Length: 202
Image (cartoon, rainbow, N blue to C red; front, side, top):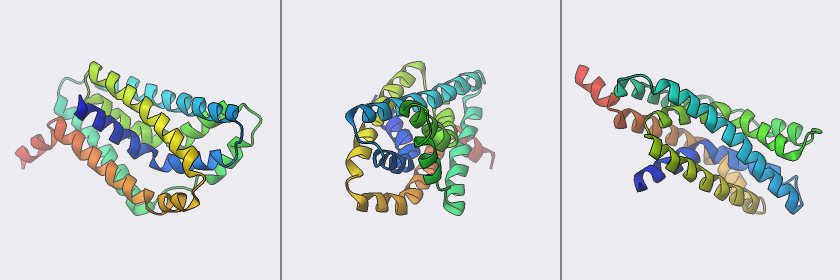
């Protein structure tokens, strides 16, 4: 169980390091306690939508009988990590400013930001990860995600008061995220037996 929780926490952190900066940017523009709750619920709604989409895709892919074939999906996080190392990432500041200032409710705005800025990463990491899990393990991972989301929310609110932290995350977050993506991809390929299968063919 500890291994599953650790894997779930690692998967969540890998897709949320950059989002922590976005949360800090959002918190720099909201003030009241009510608005902070709206940010939390919006984060929960956006992340929940992405997780649900990933679960549906993982369920469909889980119908593939050979587990090692599913492990090939581990290549996706590896490629995402390599792309991040080579090309870097897009600037999301404009998306945040534009969406926060729109006329919709703050909760829906934050959900939109979450989906727009994290969608590709979350789906790309979560689908291969969920495919390797049993139904009981998925429940544990979902609870771990909820805890991690709450911790990141608290961290985003707290760190907005420490600009130097934001600078460090912005400078090194890309490299850390890329490394974790690649490690998750390798973990998926090892756990499902895909890497062993490939090595046996060499």
